[in-house]
Image 1 (spheres, rainbow, N blue to C red):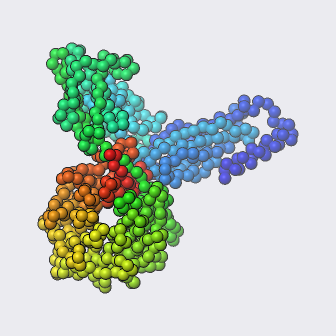
Image 2: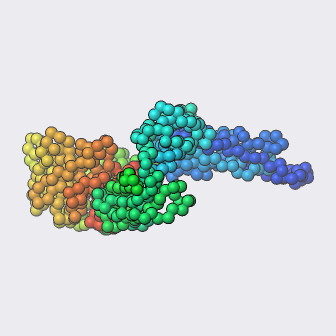
Length: 619
């Protein structure tokens, strides 16, 4: 609106000049200058005040301001409160880069645009960066990962002041070899003083060694720089303790390519011949006097490329199931206005062919698509507008069918290629597992107690879930086949639950381990096996394929929740198997399903919030 007003004002003045002939002279010489202020770094979620007060008119005339926020992070709703003010304000609602342009006019002519960049950061991501890999030696340059152009940064190491500025050159030779605590302090525009810490290791030993790794297709290029007053005699390398090779003659080192005095060695590692996952690369340099230096690096051979499946309105989403051909079922949030409040509610969705299909299952607490087959038939649950109960739904040929029981809650959790749907429905005060087929619902019974729930069904019609035993003493995973429900047992505790079943009848889920917490399990050949954890206390198996690969989630020893893949007796954090090119800024929290192609779906924390993801094997 302000832009329109300024334009009308300028047109009117120019029209007057044309009629009266009163606006002669050199227009460019009288042009005002816009100044959009200095770059800023602010905490995400905080208000940002832009500053155009330094804009000037050569004749001293008053100025009209026109601001435009031209760049925002994906999903940001940031907007200027007054685009005609000298200092408009906006909320940097998401971490990322915001770019604003400013034009000013004096009523006769307008300025060239000026630009200012605002970087919003999550405070816990602000970090100290160094221009060389550890251990540090000689002069190292210290900097912050983001800093306001005019904000001072003070540095100290082990409590000893180094100076001010970013980047700052640090002479490490004035400190003893070993670990040191580096501290940077800076003030952000809100007036808050931030303190960022990093521990670094200094090593100014006779043999100095620097190793850098870069990706080139399926190869890892390893660039080694080594120096010693006695002269480097050899460089050797090993991967997971297995020797890669020994280089005795250094390659030529161009002055622009490596530091003065260093010998350079290069070799490549063919990752196509290595099992995907984390590995340890060790590089050692030895000089002519027998002095030796070794550096070890953790490398990851990626197994999967990550795809963000997106959302219906840029909010949140999650994936819960995947068909044999790769159709994904889950949910996506949609923003609605209720009673004057802006709310996010989930809609049941299918992710297929790059598109998101809203199935129309909404409900007061959200709708979810829990299972899907290759014909895009889906199962899920939600509630119609004004309906107090959640109902199971069956989606087929573009039509949605309510398969719930009137006046009762029901949930659909699984579907197979025959369109058979399984789930849980209330019968009075108890809940019972059901199978829905050919338009009718059949209850499957229990293990002697009042309750049961069906979670999944395979192509053979075998159903898994959990049911209570007599007296509601325990709740145990079950397999229902040939009209009979039987218990799969537990890992020693009073509760277990079967969440998924393969075409071959093998089952995953979770169970309490005696008095201990829940662990994921694999049930096959009549035996329930504990799949363990990744250092934390609990794990949950959620999906299984025909190769007995199991996916789910667990906790690491540091308490962080991560998605896992269990394969051939080994549980791996899926985050360690991702292609860095597609997974920057992502943390996989839960893997919900895996198909026989090895594709994995689930929910992750990404750069734009909680999102459904698809992992595609790279080989």
